[in-house]
Length: 236
Image (cartoon, rainbow, N blue to C red; front, side, top):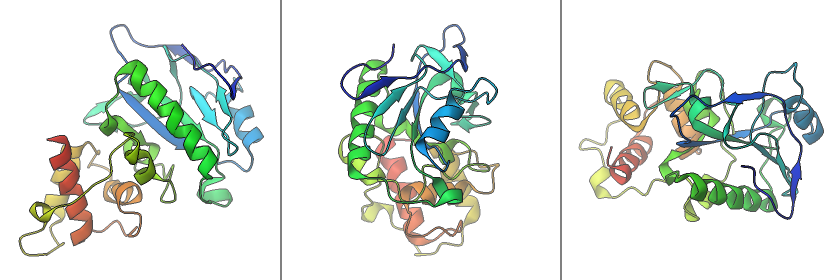
């Protein structure tokens, strides 16, 4: 099933396959296209030689391009994992969001584009029963390889609409000694939330999503407060 309606453009991609029997959609993964133009990205997603695809692409003007039916396995996540499970493609829907990315001139995402992304996400979440906490960025599931959708992406705005989570620390999330030099504890907490802690960039990916003001890849009190808040919010 693909989204239909005003502003949705049918641009099929041949790059997809069946979902494994008995595997349903559990995750919604957001990407940026990371190419110089929208057309170059759309062409690549629909090129059989590229061996990549997504279910949808949202252009900067808010237009939604539909590529792969939701009941099919698109090839968007690559080598990735979440909460100890690999083959994210089989259990997810992928949305590409037009933006040149860090290589070609990363820039803020226009409000009209973010509004379209939010509407599309809510449609998909409603159809598949995807929880807010299971809306993730590509960098969350592939921290060693990916940076998208990046630190300029409006995760707080999406969370305000029930899409993804945004941490809201309380005093209960404070560190007892206000210290941030506890790398082993941080790794354990990241693993509890869902990150692959075998990847050295897992904390940086967390910061890119949940603490974009500090992209150090090193633990600090506010990063830990936000991580603890998310664990409390999800009961993990």
